[in-house]
Figure 1 (cartoon, helix red, strand yellow):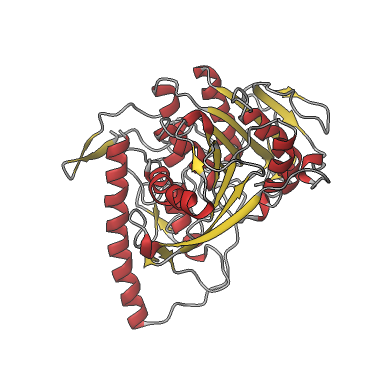
Figure 2 (cartoon, one colour; figure 1 turned 90 degrees about the vertical axis):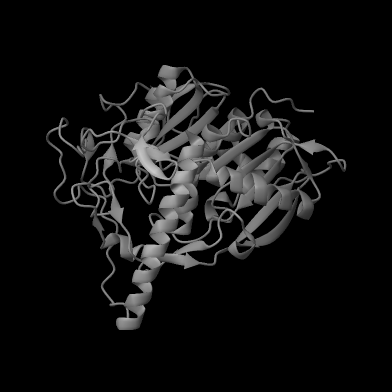
Length: 448
């Protein structure tokens, strides 16, 4: 399945690039791009949405949503959510606890986020990468948005006729990306020591500002093993038609192979470290779409990664272009595509044919994989931010609850936090939970 999806993703993206490049060039020759007012995120039920009949296509479930806030606030006692243990405000689950928990609404930063006297500090090595030197992501992908209007072109585009889940993006074209990679190496490591490591998506994000300090403290307290942290910057922009979306929201092994074949060898050379090949000693981590990518990496390559940590993971329909074998993108890890019932297709010998792979949703349909998963979602996380895509697959909090449900049913080792008073990739929540999340993530790994 994964090889077919990888081939299909490449074919679809290449075709989309060729078409949109020619359209963009024609537009540039004829007229300059119109300066339209910025369209901001929606965060309400999109116009024309189906919220009344769950048996009809693209149903949006609004059960338990308080629309007096924007995004709406979700009730953790929603009858459609799996049951969770509600903890006293300010407390976190016991070390090693599994299952579903509700925390908040107060989010004080953990003491491990503060540098402490006498704690050895790791070193940091940084380097840059360019699509010009890439095999997997060359050329890069650039979307032409109105200057000063983030995501403007996808906020005013359309969806394919009869399919509210399939966004039509005509402003993407080949281009060059550059990214920074920051490598944290723990203190007092003997040369040649084989080290476990964690790969962070969206490297350089302000959300990760405490990461190295937290590792210094946790390693010193022997709560996690000495490990390398690899923050990999994204390729730029966001969502459908952007390089970041291409990397993180594509449901295939492509991004994990980019990391394995292009990033990790550079890390070893530049930082002078030896990284373990043992998947028990390899972790992935991300936020929003890079949180989805963290899970996707382990799902398609359990031979490479067994441990996953994610904040507000985008387990929704953000994959672009649409993959006919997985039309709902990451939504189909936990739930079927919400559109009309039609056969799933895949690529075989360059043609679209009925898919022979395990059906959607992926987690219930596949044998249990050796993945240990910590993730959180806020009660005011994203809800249909794009006004033109009422597809029934863009409620971030619902997607996390559905992930928790299917993971529990399959017997996965996971911890899920529903966080009160928290928005998308909520920084106070990260500062509160990151140390305990990392400790939970590395449970069972030997500490020398």
